[in-house]
Length: 179
Image 1: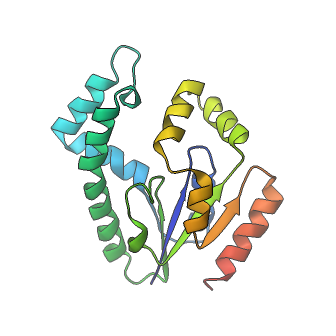
Image 2: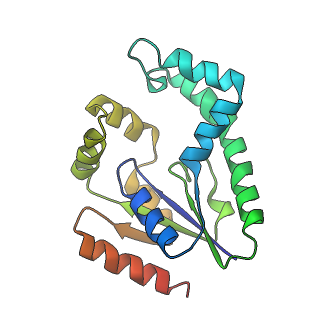
């Protein structure tokens, strides 16, 4: 089994690339969804997030709380990933869409790492189209390892934001490496 980690900054196109894998019948684990499940299942983490998100604030406005959430939730999300791998042991390829792959020190979980990269101004446009503020975008970006650093650590880099045609060609080339 080939385990592929897909990572990148918020708005980079991870979900779009993950959907392309799904459309090919390749199982994809979404670490963001798993993280929300972990928080909902843990009363302490749930209260931490709800309390921090009150009054127009976000947990991102409280770095110590965010660090605590990350420290507590990340191992549980990775347990869910490992169970996902076990559940799909007969599949040739599995993909994990994990925004904080490098930040959570999860590199060794994967055979290949794909970084989705996009110019920052396009990232910001995409995030703001989701109804998020520029401040929210900047707080997320500051918490993450710079994209260029991620690119250097990756096995493959896919560039988005430069047209669907280019993204599709890069994706096809990437997938051809595994078939």
